[in-house]
Length: 344
Image (cartoon, rainbow, N blue to C red; front, top):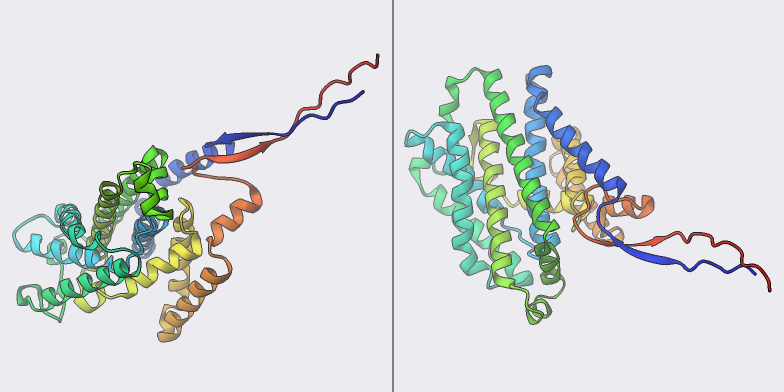
């Protein structure tokens, strides 16, 4: 008589695909450091822009995708990082060191603002962050020492040869991107990652289970402020000129929302895919003006309605793979056939 083997389930985190994906990402990051030495200056500058988009997408996904903090005011840190760099160079700080200091100052700003905005929830939080961004932009435009509303240039980098400047800016941007990805990966792999997702799903229920809601939200908000401040400072270093209307513009939030929604909100790989896709769309269609922005909005709405989990979730569900596993997954194991028992 033959007995059927029972199906079993197991909880797994990193399978073979995850180990391969992690190794491939490390190799890609190492290979990217050689880009300025083998590719022309225009490609280096374009890849710098792509890495900046990647930083922004990862930081917004960390807030909204893992902690439920849907911000439409991260441009406050983008602009603060850019103008902080200019202010520091005006006081004699070397430009690239000023970029790092401006990113750190953006984290301090986030810590201060958290006392106000983290008291808000849902739509109130979203509107509150946008209002804060508009207020900071207004202060900058009223400061004649920062160019007022006409904008400012970063003069400290003029002493570098253009090719050297592009290479240094690219390497610094790549370093920030790798640092932030590693920090977020380690954070989500820790039990803190599960706690943040519990806050996202139901903040009150998470608090009732002993999750330290306020400290975790504070930590993630400061990390996102640091990352967005770095992105703003690096944008200035890449373009050498900024205006308050553009660097504090709400379009940055639209870009971040698009990248995360299309790539896959609440996934580690999704924002990476979304940043690459957005870069390609911007490269080919940005000269379409208002129609370009309308197309981005309609695409984001379509994904929110019909594919809310984004491209990566659709792909991973179909292929049953997780390239960068940051959580646990329930997997069904195929039963092993048992030997037939002898009839008695």
